[in-house]
Image (tube, rainbow, N blue to C red; front, side, top):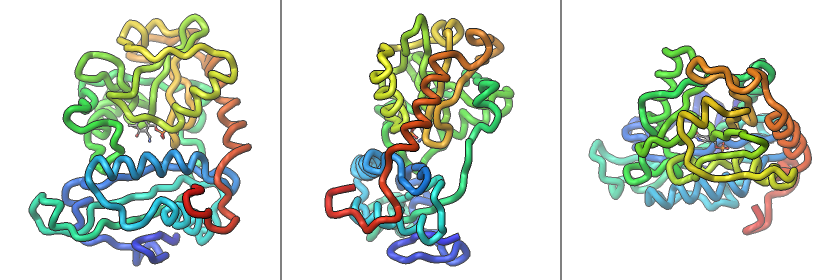
Length: 297
Ligand code: PMP
């Protein structure tokens, strides 16, 4: 496996970061999860915009431009001969001392890892996922905005640990106001009476897949309402859906012991799953062409 790290393409065993990198010491850095389908990187611009906006919020100056990052992603895929892949760009604060002060970190580091990763939930796209609501609350925006995709995923990991102990395939977070926030690594949607209801994106990550799903819903003429949701809405949903780059579009058919709807992936979920697959087949940033012209990512 070839990994991009600070201008070099290195074999996995040689791609190293310092033990003084604040990404390791403090989770001080940002990342993305992106998929490529059949030689095309899906929604590359949206992912890079979020990566660089996350970095800006944390006052990290990326060592390379968005266009250079786009090229590093494409070149990493080419060097690994990957057409279908899960891609992990990372920007860490860089090497500093053992203190917190980011001013001691002279230069941020940029890394790109790309691996083969098929359908994350295997046969659960047919059966449906079991989800459990967890007691740990999503980081409130006034503490660490969930819109920032930072290397500090401990809030999500705590949720995942709780879901694991409770026998869930995925966790459902509430925010500190008591409203449904998101899954540990995906956005959530209730389908009720033919409409899609989904939380606002102040207290969760603004998912790129969410954006795509809302575009698809609009094109299919399905009404989408962004609103506060609670336990009641989860348990009484006709269908429940989660979406993310890794998870793609997945049905949730069980929450905290309650069977959701018919207990099988419902018609709206199936429609969105099929439409999402179709979109991933028809668009994306081609890997096997020249580097994008400036500002054209
Ligand atoms: N929420 C969280 C906490 C996530 O980690 C992810 C995965 N990036 C998502 C939502 C879904 O975002 P996206 O569709 O951009 O992958």
